[in-house]
Length: 155
Image (cartoon, rainbow, N blue to C red):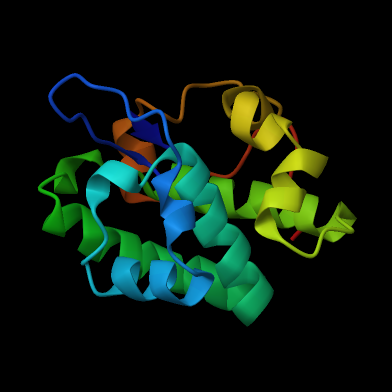
């Protein structure tokens, strides 16, 4: 399973089909993530999107970018996937979520995803609008932020 924040996790070659992160309130979800107590099996792509949405809504884009990077680096160490972290992908994903927040009229994360289903279903295509090269597998992208070469971001 690939989370958009720049790391890959695989669990017994099984795909988690239910979005069980919704069993947690926004506060509990973020708290467990920050404290590295969140079950990594529920940290799906959609859960990544939710984390970005909550963080941007609560703290603004600049603080969200800073906090999510450090929190995610801690989390990937916790789950034993430190080598999978990708700085560019992490920042890009947050910027893409922010782009859609600026256009959104939604008051909840579920409504936000319903308003912009491409975030969940076509995320790689959204990234491809900004980069002509593969940021997912770039060693350089893992350690430093690579600016987009096709289209810049809103912020």
